[in-house]
Length: 73
Image (cartoon, rainbow, N blue to C red; front, side, top):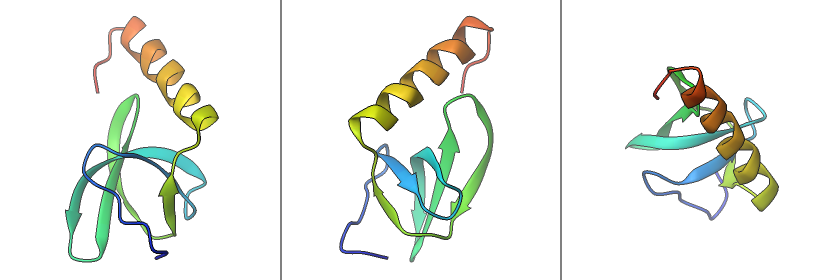
């Protein structure tokens, strides 16, 4: 991983899956992420970096859409 170490709750870009996720756990060198709509958490295997402003906006829209369909992450 690069010099960036995310904290729980941070929104990050996962190079391994090419998607934005929220850090929900950190065990040793491994980070677990979740998507805005809920679903399965995944282990990040690629390099993580902070999500850009555009990626954060996209994440927020996906979260709002999920909530409007009655789903809560």
